[in-house]
Image 1 (cartoon, rainbow, N blue to C red):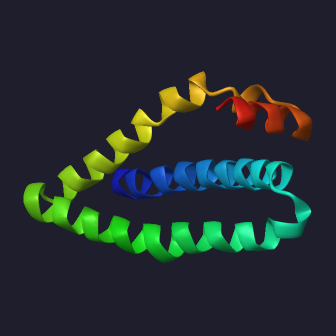
Image 2: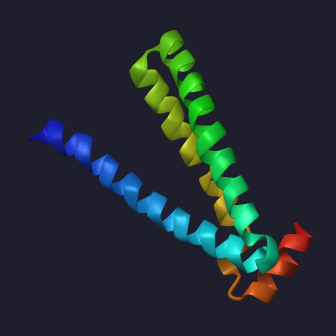
Length: 109
């Protein structure tokens, strides 16, 4: 029973966080990118993240797992995700409420 919880709870939490990130990313992209190029921008983001990012990430994870083991590779992945939290905390984006604010924030960054 404990093993089942240890497997499914992180998956459930991760899926929830990925859903939140996906909604935030899509909202940001749609607020910043002009409508005339929005389709091309979305396609480019998908190719970069899924077509390049996932395979490269899998190769890096495999290399790390080969060096320090699967548990070590998982720990490195979790540490990398945790390291991204301070960037989100100090970012102005969570406090932006309108597309006009997004544009001015993007220009400031």
